[in-house]
Length: 109
Image 1 (cartoon, rainbow, N blue to C red):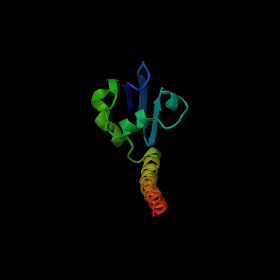
Image 2: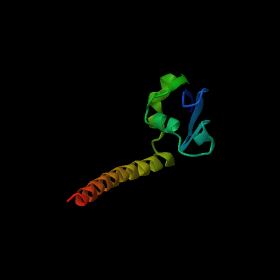
Image 3: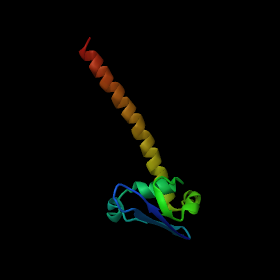
Image 4: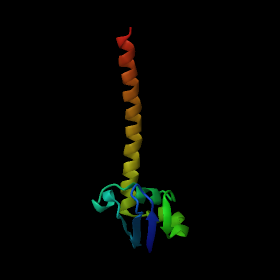
């Protein structure tokens, strides 16, 4: 299975995202600056969520199929691990914010 999407990002020219799956092997590329450096790219992650945010062309009618492509792949496992860490990070940020408020309150006591 091969999918091609055209995404309007921050550049004048839209980016192209290619997602392919053969067996349990899932690949996804984007020609945005981050994607070209093989780094995290919000364009691919939005598609993996089933989001059509920024899409301006390509397989627009296939967006809903993309989240299912993750099933049983190493990419799915890594995204799940990332989601867990993002949840933990959100909790730590709340604790840091509360600690900052406590410090500020202590300074005014």
